[in-house]
Structures are given as structure tokens and as C-alpha cells.
Length: 168
Ligand SMILES: [Zn+2]
Image 1: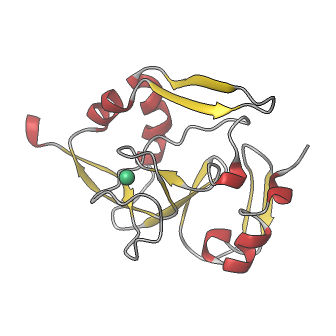
Image 2: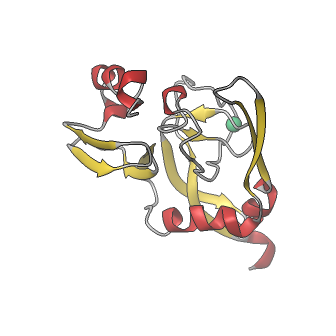
């Protein structure tokens, strides 16, 4: 098969164009996070695009052209600049090698199903379906009556609310 390989992975699902990524096909990048990134800015609950790095909320599982290894080679090393709490510009290498990238992506790729929609939420991946949600995330634990991505009021109380994420 060689040059014509396909892989099951996630692409932006944003038919209204309401999110920042406006690539024709916004392919999901590896979901790298730690406690120094800022969930109130969306980094803890949005996908980001491998081409433009911009964010979107829903991703759909589908076949993309090429292999995940090819995508991993294109996406690494991945660096990120951010302003530290003391106000300095810091640059970190998040994912140095294709293997680092695949270590995050492969477990997700192994569980997603063609045609299903998914959200990213505090280190985990969930189908974009209504229903109560309870888990320990990277930043804090969650015990919510519904998936907050699907509820405007719940989103205001939780995902978009700095107090919700401030667990210090
Ligand atoms: Zn994009």
C-alpha cells in the first residue's frame, strides 16, 4: 500500500466555523498538557490543530491521508512559548521526538471509532454525548451532571470559569 496509506484519527468538526482553526481539514495535534498550561484559556478542554495550532472544541474520527508516524515526524519537536507567572517569556520543548508524540496519540487512536465526535477534557478524551461525568483529570477532579462542552450554562460555571480550575 505504501504511499496510499490511511489512518484513523481526529479532525476538526466545526461546520459553523465558530472556532479559531479555519484550515480546510484541521487535524488534531497530540494533546500535550501539564500544570503550567492554562485550562481557563481552553488548553485543558479544547483540541488544537496540527497545521495552525489554533483551537476547536469538537473533533470527528475519520480516515486521514498518511500514517500517524508521518504526522508525528511533522509535528516534532514541538515547542511552546508562554509567559510564566513571574512575567518572563519561557520556551519549552514539549514533545521532542516522534515517539513522544505517538505515545500520546496512539492510545487515543486505538479507542476512537469512525464517524464519532469527541471532546478533550482535562487530559482525557470523551465521546461528545450528554450524560454525567466523573473522573480525576490533570488539573482537578470533576463530578458534573453533563458533559460541559455540550451545555452553555455548565461551560460558564466550569470550563470557562477561572475559579473552577483554581484548585490551589
Ligand atoms: Zn488549523
